[in-house]
Amino acid sequence: MKNRLKVLRAERNWTQADLAEALSVSRQTVNAIETGKFDPSLPLAFKLSRLFGLPIEAIFEDPAT
Picture 1 (tube, rainbow, N blue to C red):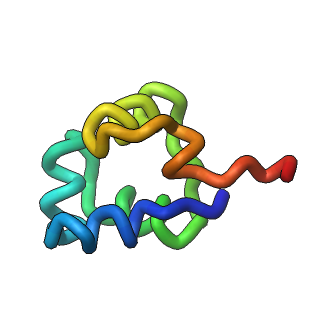
Picture 2 (picture 1 turned 90 degrees about the vertical axis):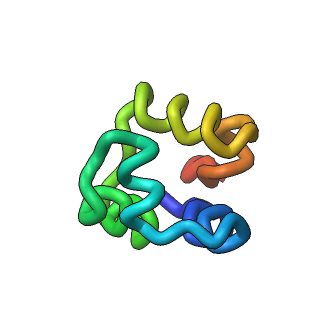
């Protein structure tokens, strides 16, 4: 699933490790989500939404469109 995670993270000068720590996941998980190799669970997507203060739709692209 395409997403803006890398851009949003870079805007805040966060490393993948910083984001992983904030989400309580591994850096490898953050990398896999950023590269589209892994789609986050719904609870993790909500966590990302709260962390960035954006709706889920502003972070992840709807694959149906």
